[in-house]
Image 1 (cartoon, rainbow, N blue to C red):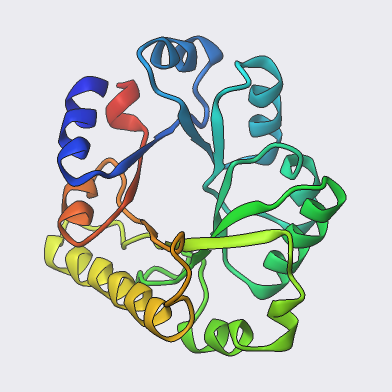
Image 2 (cartoon, helix red, strand yellow):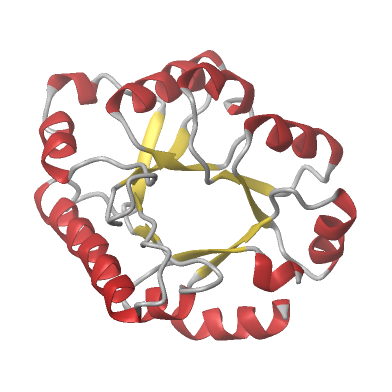
Length: 214
């Protein structure tokens, strides 16, 4: 399954994040031996433990809701944080990255789904912050794109429309804020059930778990 999905993604040059949450180390190592190096976790404690136990050339992505008081545990090693859903969280990541003499790559998470349980920012709020002096003081975070999660539904039209909303947010931020920032290029959207639609709508990074590990 890994090879088939990677072949699909290669056509669109989409990055695969293998979602390894709740999976034992043996399963991750099996995929590692097949060449996969990017893994995503959604719980800090589990992420830290796997980082300590597994090969150090794995790029670990934090893809779940992240509490500010837990940033310090992953700041020494995390490769990318997908779920930056507030300005205060971004500021805390910057603070902890500075303590570790690192620059941490981040994605801004936007709420595109109708579900109340989904986290994310509103585009007008973050645009105001990104144009402020407060944002310019953040030297240890690097925003390289955005992330969003579609509604969990069988309505493919709704899912497609939500992905299009995220694509339009990316285009707006790229044009208005990050037009000269070459590494602002990632749109993390799409999971096991909807990644094909996400790719059609411009995703550059998909988070796939159950399909890979089934």
